Amino acid sequence: MPHPMPAEPEINEFIRRCDAFYPANAVSASIGQQRAWYDALCAAFDAPRPPGLASVDAEIMGIATRSYHPAELRRSTVLLYLHGGGFVVGSLKSHDAICAEIAHAVGAELVAVDYRLAPEDLHPAASDDVAAVADALIAEGRRLVVVGDSAGGNLAAGLCIRARDAGMEGIVGQALIYPGLGGDLGQGSFLDMAHAPGLTTADVAYYRELYRADPEDAVAHPLAASSFTDLPPAYITSAHFDPLRDDARIYAERMSAAGIAVTYRNEPQMIHAWLRARHMSPGARDGFAALCRGIEDLCGKE
Image 1 (cartoon, helix red, strand yellow):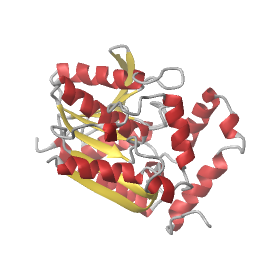
Image 2: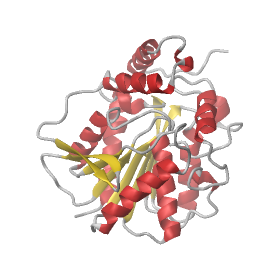
Image 3: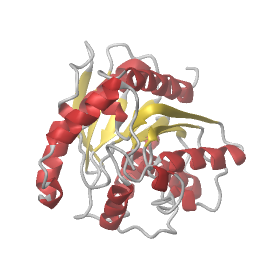
């Protein structure tokens, strides 16, 4: 049986370029080499930064961060960005252009967090890092919208649960981009899209094994939460050709049922990691524009 594939020609060209980027034995390479390949792959699809945008590297609570300042700052809300990469790869470098373009489109300062990665540092190290940065920004009186893609979407959702349970105020919204939220690997899209391009169910299982988080820990697996009340409003987007699709959909449904304002959008021709295709795919371009509008809405009127 053929594997599911999108019909959009441009996203299929994106898939072809991604597949050609890695050598056949990439999975056996060292973690360091995999990280270098991932950063280079991300950079291969980037465009020049928006004009007038500046960035500053700094440490917050001893954690490396990069803050982006658009030429036109229209909002006081800060966007806290948590990159994807399965908790194993990804960096400030891999998502530099994405962060710059979101900051520019929304007109807000964006702070990206270089959280600790597995397998060197297991859960809750990454969650502790993003919580420490969020705490520090909130202590300065900043309102935050937390944004994350893939594993970063997991960390964003987990941060919101962690903040709620700790009584920490200041996070006013969450934008989750094709997040992995701890769904059952034997159900739904994990079966239908088990061999999807860009990310397979076996890949998800591999990253979970490296991360070593308790399946009952709601910060690590937000779908395991016993309550979805009192969480910040959310913009959640998924890709149809992605085993993580149902994680996003089910999380949106559970939050909505708990009375949380949620906008859910499924990109019908997209695959996992479609953000990288935003400059070559019409579907990714539309999805990115919708994401930025959704983040603006979460910031509210200022």
